[in-house]
Image (tube, rainbow, N blue to C red; front, side):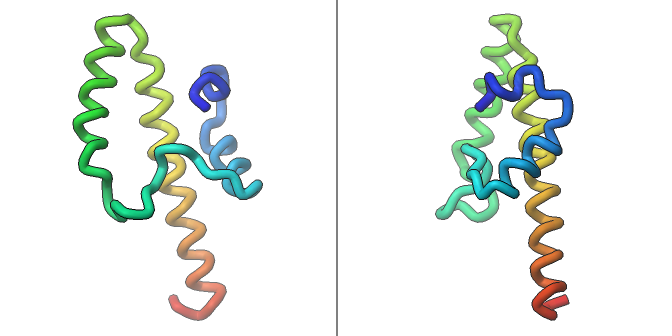
Length: 88
């Protein structure tokens, strides 16, 4: 997944296309941990440190942008669904 995003200019559009096509975005959401997987913070720190040591920081930037965009799009869709069914 990250390799396909390496040259992607519009991550938000990529996320939207994936969700529109019914594709799952790996690492974005968990059936058990509704808020945040407790392992995520630890892995985030490891990724940042390792990326810095290997001069590969761009991977973390892509992941951070992906996480931010996918969260916003999912929330917007949730609101649309709730409005459509009269919950808001």
